[in-house]
Image (tube, rainbow, N blue to C red):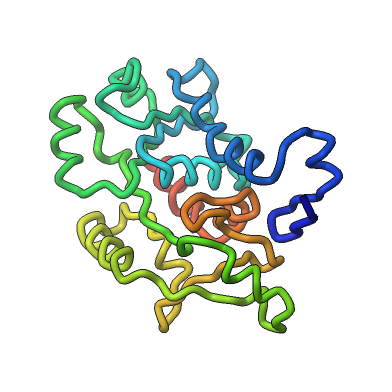
Length: 224
């Protein structure tokens, strides 16, 4: 073990906890599974999030944002197998799917009578397959501003979903990508955005919570 500042990992703290930064990050990404349950009677804004790790990451983005204390999140991986889904869908002020093609919404709407006004779709993101190549450039003067060439496959998926969903698409890739189709590897304070190229670290979730236009999302809720 050694200190890895880019992961907020300190060797002595890991020894005390009996864990390591990989365990901590996995736990952070999987904490959302504890929210796979119906909403409470709270007066907080109720947000139902449905889908894969893109959905779970967006839950962390919301929880790390300025709205974190104002919301209650209910999560399920699969709308078809989640418990009490009709009740949760009805109670939700906002319903977020992840990386879902628009025709699927019509099928779900027919099955569950979903109020589609409340529905948004969370887009794709990707940061490569390994952080090793970036970490090995530790002594490069441009270390903290390294960028990754985006896989064309993800760009194509993103463009398709953006076209289908229009203003109801939360375009995470569009926030990051530049004219050379590259995305950042680190947050502005030089923390890895992702530990494995797919899932967000806590600093990564905080970073997205600051650059995604969440005001637009929550303003829509108040008008519904």
